[in-house]
Image 1: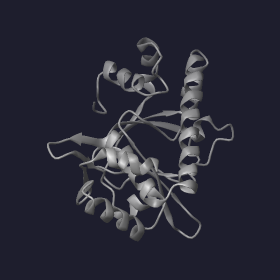
Image 2 (image 1 turned 45 degrees about the horizontal axis):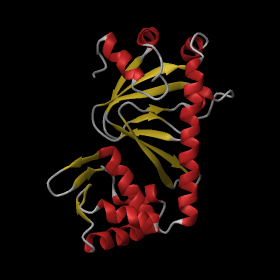
Image 3 (image 1 turned 120 degrees about the horizontal axis):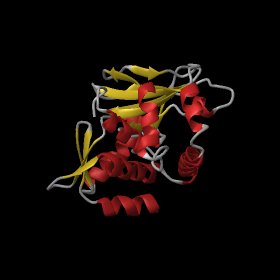
Image 4 (image 1 turned 135 degrees about the horizontal axis):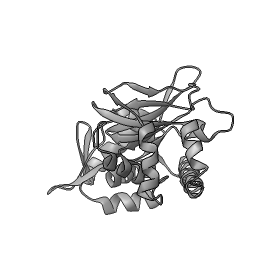
Amino acid sequence: MTPNGTPREEADLLLGTALFRQVPPADAAQLIPHLKHRVFAKGDLIFSQGDTDQRMYVIERGRVKLTRESADHRIQLLSISTAGEILGEIPVFDPNGGPRTANAIAMTNGTATASLEHDVLFGWLDDHPRVAVNMLQVLANRMRLNNEHISDLVFMDVPGRLAKTLLDLAKRFGKPTEAGIAVTHGLTQEELAQLVGTSRETVNKALMDFTNRGWIARDGRTIVIFQPGQLIRRAQR
């Protein structure tokens, strides 16, 4: 799918997201003239923490990381999103209109997005109230994941959280190879540590332990998982 795709491809893009999954194709097609396409280089900001715009984004291709910056300029990696996923919906559905709570940064060259303005989306929602139910389901699932993440930070040790994070990355980005599941995550060790919720030194120690046990191997920003069952057991301990 390219930013200049056919109307059918653009309708399929919307229908592939959780928000529009149960919408008839003809209804989703009504939004196509309002989609605004952009292509970003690696490292480009798609939107910034504190912005007051009210656009919702769908990722057409590539990966995007969401980060949050503290008052003393510390950076926390919140999540990674990929093609077919929605970004920036909080200020769209917030009755106060913002501001944005995170930065969205392209992780790959050629990352492409399509965006919809608040007024267009809400005008369309008036005729398609079923999507509002889908929206609640999407937001409820994100709330569940956030609660689970908070629980993990409180109750799980770092190796357990790391094992769970590696399994999640493998589920989303992993590719089977003869050796094992190759996970090209594209993260620095500092970013991986932020995703786990610990320091770089601590996550490196846990990675070394997993490597010495023969569960994984590291090759730059790729991790090969040899024994996913061991990681599952470690995550459940």
